[in-house]
Image (cartoon, rainbow, N blue to C red; front, top):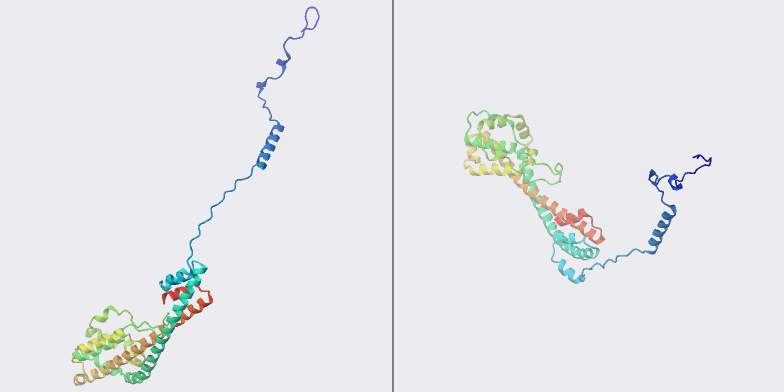
Length: 320
């Protein structure tokens, strides 16, 4: 500023007012030195501080019984329970193995004696009854379709002839038993469920229809082999019908009708053959069942002595 005297007049405003104001919006940058010193302090503190270790208290050990007491306790258990105990620990497995081995050996000894006796009975029965089976099978070869055709000619046959023809229809209509080779388990089911119609008496019109069918004629022609597939409940039903009717005799049928007499011979041959064959089948089934038990127990015993029991063998032995 120029005054009248020609001298320059400096502004008396202080220099601080020329500096930019602190409220201009500029932020203050933190000092790098301060951040570095804080990090160093944290590291030093972490280096000097050690983690506190937590000491776990010792687990309580269950009391162990001597093997002598375990033998006494385990001896009161069943075989399935002993098989379950084997998987608890190696020590209990050893104790259970000793008991199981002793039990299986005793059972094997008893089963071997029973199996030997059953095999002897079956062989003696078969050698005694086999000639009878051949005899009755020979009579079944003499079946003739002429007798069936003559029986169907009667519009209203005698009661004795109708009963004999009904017995033949029951034997033919009954579901056939399967052979052991066609059975999934390899064992014949000797006690199947009888059909509902078995306890119902058949009318003569239905009997004539059955006797005239192609399936019945074929069955009668091959009766000497088809008799092996007649279920025993059909034999029992026919036997009950014949026994309950006092007029069904050879003498009475010979007087009433020669056709009825010939057909009665076939019915009687079927009854005798199937009764003997069923007895032989049941004895044979018992022998096979005992043999399977012996084999399973021998497998179980060999696995016990080898100390390598598979789960399937344990389960099989527990069910025996």
